[in-house]
Length: 406
Image (tube, rainbow, N blue to C red; front, side, top):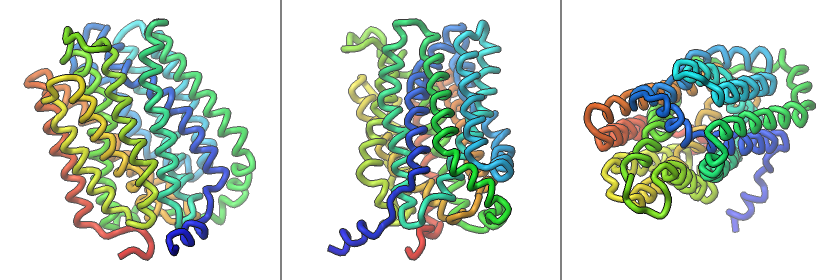
């Protein structure tokens, strides 16, 4: 009975946050379309697995380099202008990627896209942290993650289907999706943008020095690093290559080149299942338990990927790893929002968190690609699983960030 009363008393998600959530869905559809295709697209230039991984890492490298600028711009211009600019930059890079004549230019276009990506990612996270009511931060983070993940479920399958029209088409579709998302935010958040500009002088800012003093923030940086390594790095660069090459000629129900899209989609299904059912519970359970449990589950499933004897086991492990990540991401974002605090602009705090995640996304694919070339896929996935356990250890030693939670 008390639980129902608590749910009734909790505020609804504000309309302006719903706009950001809808935009995340549009972006995720496009990202999911190109994620399984990009490594194969890059490998068609006749380069090694290490070079293919460098395409993913270059994107992350420029996100890393421009994360401090995105935090400062967010504080100076406001979240929504930086968000729209970022989307348009990535849209332009996707269209250019579709027509890249050489591997070197492909690398440059993907790197430039990283600039826009960090702009819209940091500004969106800052906007959500500032606007989310404290009582429902976990719910808001879960809804945002759900929108992104639902798009990632449909995206890879749609991308595999679009391949029949040529390899350029998925990248062009993603560019169009980003332009649509930019228009959605620009026009529907005009009132919010004007109000924020009016109140900019009186708004409090959360400083990085203050956040760094918190052991929970340092734990969030650690878990962000290892999650970036595994989820945004290794999974988007090495898993598609493994799925496309390890089961060639196996006579399975779908072509091995299409299996990459299904593997990423299955991972996203595991994410969505957990985010829909358990992510919002971090508002009652706290942030630490979901993060630690999720990291351990994802670490084990990821570490075993290289030993998958057939496509069914690969998909099952991807599903389990996705479920573990579904526990991690919303609770982790809510924890950073707790540290920033309601009504405060935490651009530098959020951008530093994003930097650590991107650093993992850079180092993970490079090391994994090197291990694949020199040893095997089993080594690449095994080391990634071990790295993820360090994130769980960091949170085991950190205090809870949820207000009024011991």
